[in-house]
Amino acid sequence: GQTLNITSSGNLTAGSYNILADKAVIAGNLTSGSGIFNITTGEGMYISSTGKVIAGTGDDYLGSLIMMSGEYSATSATTHITSNNSEGYSVKHNGTLTANSGKFRIESQDTTYLDLAGSSGNLYDLEIATSDTANEATAVVPFDIDNDLTIVSGTFHNGPFENNVAGNFLKTGGRLKYASSNDWLDVAGNLISTGGDLDDDSAGFSARTYVSGNVSITGLTMNMDNSWLYIKGNLNTTINASESQVGGYFYINKGTGYEVKALSNLTFHHLIH
Image (cartoon, rainbow, N blue to C red):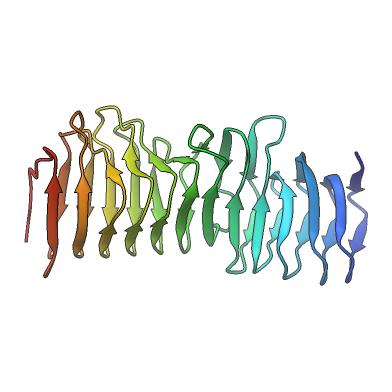
């Protein structure tokens, strides 16, 4: 494959040309202009401590994005992360990120690790769209998302952290996985889920999901298994609880006009209104 290698004293402005490579090692300055990045393998883009990359305004395909205290200014459209580096990371954010209200979409075909907490700057929108639920995208450090977290397909493992989503948690498929009592997800907006498994495989631990807005859940099985869902807004949902997962807790604070319909043998231990 071909490698784009920009040294610490090097500069490249692509203008209207697309940057096509199998690997990009950036120690100097790289500006996309009106073109796009199309980096096609798991080696992806590596930004060293002296590197600075400015993307254009179209969709970019980076393979993996590894930032070693360098700078990355993302596209305002979608950054497609399509594979892993040799250490199994699809994103390793140890530098300065300017998200520009764009979306990072994780599309790896393998199990992958996400290091999303850099020295400066958070992701704006994060979308999980890995190939299937067997391929987990796992957070390895606590993180903050400045807008929405979306799961389209695959499994997102929250990790043993309290992670924060400033916008909404949207789920059309795939699976949210908790694996310990330290797995917490704080959602400042709404939780809207229309498919897949929510809070699956919590393995008997008291994992927690806090939702400051409203919750709407349709078209899925919610396997609580002693995990907790805190809702500060309204709950409008039909929840199917599997026979072996009956120890869940729902806390509903200041809800108005909510409707709860429980099927199977789910028990509401706390219902505050």
